[in-house]
Image (cartoon, rainbow, N blue to C red; front, side):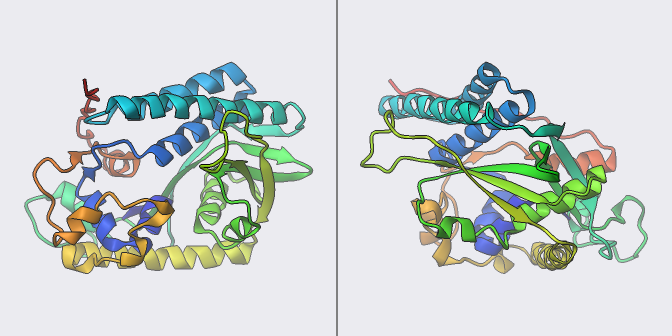
Amino acid sequence: MIINVSRSQGFQACRRKQWFYDQGLGALKVAEPLSMGSAYHKGTAHLTAKRDREGALKVAEESYRSDLAKAKLILPEEQVLHERNIELIKRMINAQADQYTKDNWTVLKPEVEFLVPLPGTEHHCHFVHKILHPDQEGICTEPFNGKCYHPHYLKGKTDAILSWNGMIWIMERKTSGMKQNIFWDQWYLSHQLSAYVYGARKATGLPINGVILEKMPKPAKNQDPFSFDYSPEREPYLRSESDLAEFESELVSIAEDYERAATVGKSAFYRNPQSCIDYNRRCDFWDTCKRGGVPNAGEFAQRNPDYVELEYYKLLGLEAPKCSPTPAVVAE
């Protein structure tokens, strides 16, 4: 299979939620925190690579509005909230741009996209087989079956790779309202940071030392967001050869568990109720799971294939399925 950080984390957090996602189900409403994070991330990636403040603001706004365009319904009061969010994102990026005028790094690569095979995992073909032979159940019985013979792959994309203070780093950013030092502890063993270093190293050949994680603070609900101090904080996270070897071993195990579950079907994608309110909001599939796990007609949108799903077609030299974005409907 082709696995990325999102699939790995999703499968570990709640298999049933990942199952719904793999069936192509998407929420009808915009996931506001996710859209804000994505827009901010894209804007700051542009800012890092080009030192272009106005371009970064434009990229961030276009990203957020693109997410809005995928929503089935936007209520008037929600539209006001979304416009407010766009303004807050712009304030964050402006604070970032102010900080970057003081920095002296050199951008080695503005962005790195990678698809790297995981060693020792040849002939894991369930997902490839579904595309090549949709009329056949199961996987190939012969170990060498043409295009079906593939290993697991790690797919990902990082922002800029920088030379900074005599070392090579990937810059990664998060937004968070968490003020405690515990925020920083979660990243020492993070698969996300390890995946970026592992994949970018193999794709570029650069001896990347680790990740500089930048946190943009977010105001609490009782704080005025328009007078808030948006001052970014940073922490470096190194990854050694042994760290990356352990990550590789763990990711292979996750991918193998994932593919085994996929060959069984929904029953192997069991629920984890501890994840129902991750990120302080209800999971999009919470109501569905309460009813026994069968979505109602019209409850979800059929999402477009994501970049991992499209990568299978590139890998196989096939034409990808056509995407058809769903336009937003603004309520009267």
